[in-house]
Image 1 (cartoon, rainbow over the protein chains, first blue to last red):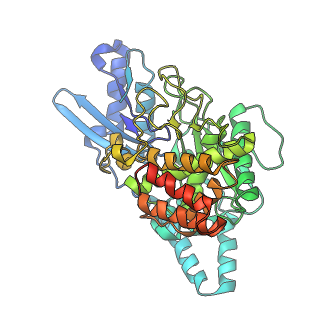
Image 2 (image 1 turned 135 degrees about the horizontal axis):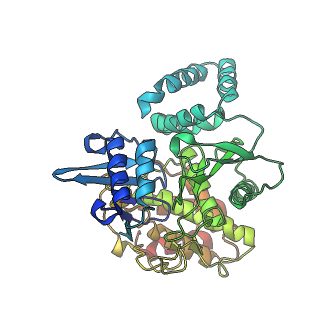
Image 3 (image 1 turned 180 degrees about the vertical axis):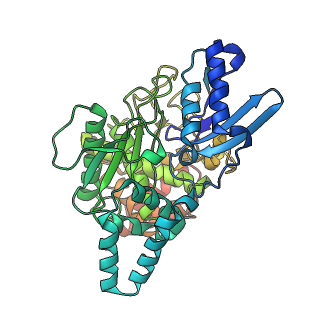
Length: 97
Length: 356
């Protein structure tokens, strides 16, 4: 889920491995594993900058679950790649709010 | 993130502090810093200095190299750490084969001209700071922002925001550049009411730029921010309406009166938008619209200069809606006479939206 941008909109994007093609589901697990999101502790993002978005990211696998909030400048290349991929993979869901 | 760049930032701060005590040392220090200020690492460091220095943020402009006054970069779908990207067009150079680059360039130039001709302000920092824009940020990115040192534009996904729309609208470019002006003047803290004022000044002066460029009167203007930039999944005409907050699109939550103020926490939850800065800005936005239309003729002749004078001379990082009301009334009296129509119109506008 992302918000705080110029448009003032909140956007939620979801991808469930169970609803993806087998190869995509595998790719999702690999991308999530590469980000280390299950164990990530967000850095202190400092004072807010105008119109810069922040992202609430939840990863879930079996009994494991973690939610972090990251500012635009704190997204690692791996997390950025995951968000881009989730937003474009066939079978993902996206909605306002 | 700040620790990673501390080695770059600290010597600069020390240099500036030393420079404060000695005029010739100061000049030498600024020249030294300016020599490499356009490299990527320096730019990232500059952004972080903005946050570290807080009230001293206005010093950043002194570090930008002189010469190229308006430069557009292509970040080639990279992210924050890739900014600004590859330089594609600078001042005095002809258009290139990329619409987004040319739009970002032209709209930045128009905004700079507006500030210079109408408000007598020399660029963002009033000291000729280079305007830096990066286009093609990330992939299908639905946002534009001021990162503390430069403007950044996504391409739009097509569903939420229209593809190619973010550089096209002069009002959006004027909005982002005005965030820069706010940073170098009042420094309004981006949280709750002071944050909503930061947003509202960006909308108000962004709209004034648009009206000035189109030579429209306050009565002729549409008072829309982001007209025509909504994507296929959005129903409406624009992102915000200053004339009728809350009516720009289906789901627009902006109030136009203190009666409907949306009290949200500034709690790091992206849903809460730093305490509703893009939501409650509807209230001061409506006050600006009311003042401008009551003052008549062109917004840039009266309402724009009044709001700008308050921003530059009176408001502070923690200013609230009431402070903005009092400051703009005082500026109207200062610019157009005590007890004159301008002062009365500005007061009436804030009273109508319930701030006074």
